[in-house]
Length: 314
Image 1: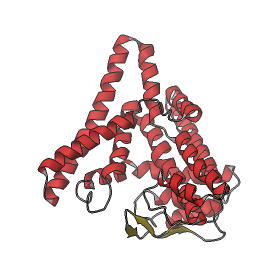
Image 2: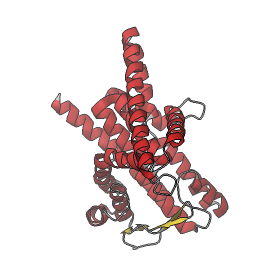
Image 3: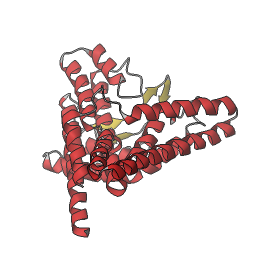
């Protein structure tokens, strides 16, 4: 757990330095290469679906075995080298600081009254069309992104680190990266991305539910509406096209007394999404800061919970 706490602390301090050769970059290159190879031979929906299964299997297995091999080699050279590499690989799996930075860039643009810049900066962190969004819609999108990625970018990597170390956390990042690249339900990726999307849903099944519960706990400590957060989590957790995203979004909507979700445009297509939470008050810019605070505190609470559980077991 010491390595995991250290990786979490380093992410809080440094985030993802742009000059650092991040593993996700190379995962993306591998996924793009495999996609190109699959498309050369797969011309029917069935063949694309089979090719997608191949792409998913090869990507996850390659990342897992490669990271295992690197750590095994490091351990054979020197135990300290193993600890350092293990710690660095864990650090690269976390995205709290970068998520905060990207979200606050949108916040500052809104604060300055520059909707054009806010829409541009939002487009860097969401997949939907941002060109026509008003201030409230932009703010909602940032809040949704922060709490959804609390699960995908922080809690899930921590969860897999705890049960399988850096290799399993990196394998999860490969799954998550595949989903963000090919897991779309549009004409281009409906069949090729099927396996990646399903595996991502499965990989996030437990972390999303853990995130929802601990966001309620964070709401309590932050003096937000934790009672409504719990009620909305239980009521609206399935009000989402994803089997997982509704958990953190519902918990956050209840805690902030706002309504999230609704219909959005993705790649020129309208995608209907149910709403989560109640429209008790209008969304405001400071809800972005509140969501970020909930992200950090829920992550710390989860780390503390699992550290205590590990101490009691061992």
